[in-house]
Length: 365
Ligand SMILES: *Cc1c(COP(=O)(O)O)cnc(C)c1O
Image 1 (cartoon, rainbow, N blue to C red):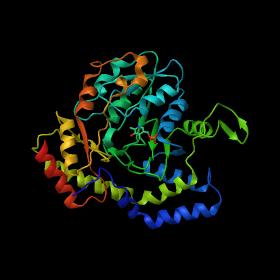
Image 2 (cartoon, rainbow, N blue to C red; image 1 turned 90 degrees about the vertical axis):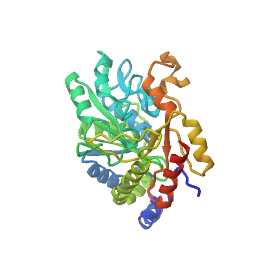
Image 3 (cartoon, rainbow, N blue to C red; image 1 turned 180 degrees about the vertical axis):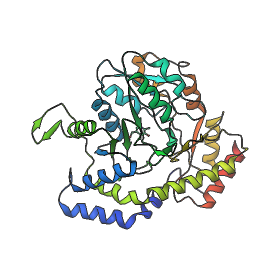
Image 4 (cartoon, rainbow, N blue to C red; image 1 turned 90 degrees about the horizontal axis):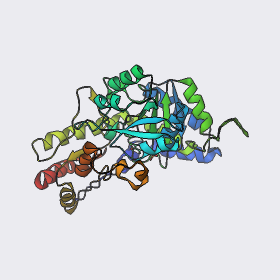
C-alpha cells in the first residue's frame, strides 16, 4: 500500500460544491482584489477565532512581519523567538530590522519554554513570539503573564494551529496579535498563497490594513512605506467556502491522532506529548527516533511518505551566519531537529492507512 505524506483531495471533496461555486462566482464578478469576498472572510475568520478584527494578507510570512511592524517593532529592537521553528518566524523579525533572540523549547512539548523566557529579556526586547508548533498550542497563560510583567507584547505564530485551544480558549484570540498562514497544506488552506492576522486591537488592525496596501488608506495617497500583500478575492472565497468544514476536519485529525497514539504506545519511538491544558489542531504528528534517517528510509521502502519538520534549525542556517551561532548553542532544538519525523496524518486517511502506518513504524523502529 502506498500512503502519501499528505493528500489534499479529501479536504477538497468535503467542501467541493461550495469551493467550485465560489471560484465561478469570483471569476464572473470581474473583481479580484480587495472586495466583498475578502470582507466576508475577514468577518468569518475573526468570529471563528473569537477576535475583534481579522485582516487578510498575502501569506503567513507577511502576516508575521506586518503584525510585528504594527506593534512598532523596528531597527534595534529584539524579539524573543523559539530556537526550534520554521525559519519564517525568524525572517519576519529580521525583515523589521530587529534581532531574533532564540529561546529553547520545552523538551517534551517542543514549544517555547516559559521558564526560559525571562533570562532572554533585555531593555531592547519588545515582543515575545511563540509558535504553536505542529498544531500543539503553546502555554499562552504563562507567556501572556510574563509579557504583562515586563511590559511586552505577544504575537503568536498560528500558522500550524487553526482551531487549537489552550485551556479551552482558541489560539488567535489570546495574544495581542495572531499571525496565520493559509498556505495550501495548512489545516485551513487556500488554493494558492494566503495569510492573515487576528487582533483585538483596532489600532493594529488599522495599521496593517494600510501597510498591506502600499501604505495607503486613500488611493494614491501614501502615509507609510507599505507592501503589496493582500489576500485576493479567489483565495478569500475559497477559504470562506472551506471554513464551515474546518471543525469536522480537525475532529477527524484528532481521531486519527488518538489512533496513532494508542497504536504506537510501547513502540520504540517518542510520541507527541499533549499537556492537559492543550487541545491540539494536529497539523503534524511528529515522533522522535534516535536513528531517524534510517527509520525514514525503512518507511519509504514500505511506501509510507514522511517528512522532517525541520532538518536544520534557524541558527544553523547560512541565512543566519551573521549571528555567529553554532552547533551546541541550542542543544534542545538541535536534538529535536536531528530526531523528529512527521508521519502521515490527514483527513480522509482510511483505517487501513492508519493500521499500515502503525504496523510499519512498530516493525522498523
Ligand atoms: C507555514 C508557516 C509560516 C509561513 O507561512 P507562509 O504562508 O508559507 O508564508 C510561518 N510559520 C510557520 C510555523 C509555518 O508553519
